[in-house]
Length: 114
Length: 116
Image (cartoon, rainbow over the protein chains, first blue to last red):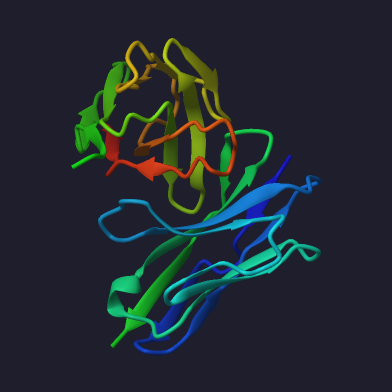
């Protein structure tokens, strides 16, 4: 069974600085998808970024980028130029190419300080 | 605006009572999902439906039931058999393109259920 591990329950960063959130996963499959979702205090889940395992190039969305290390089964999220609005829970998630079941990690609570 | 509407936002229930959480989407999405969120446990899949009149159990389906009579609606009933129902419930939907991974989930705002 696939598992997703986020080893950092809480992180903090000063505004305008860069922070990296860690995520590792376990799977025997070679083709899959990885996601980072953000849940702000409103609790509305929002997709931040998506990576397809067969693509070697790391995904980037504005200030958000990932470091995808397939061999190490690692999928970290880097937030550059952190903003107060980035304060949220961040969830890493795995989706098998063979199913439509999204498996979530336990989340990392990020606090951005002024 | 297209989106997912969950209601009620807050719900209180006495032990032994069934309660139904509503989820409606106007995105014309084929697939719909129910997740449960508990502190420190992330999101866990309860039930999902890829098409009208069909649904599958997720990882924690015991004590829950669903129906999918209309494409737009996927209500979740929390039955008295659910031993620890106090939680935050999230509904989601996605276009079912037939290619997994293209199915990015859109989430509702959630419903908070508290059992008294």
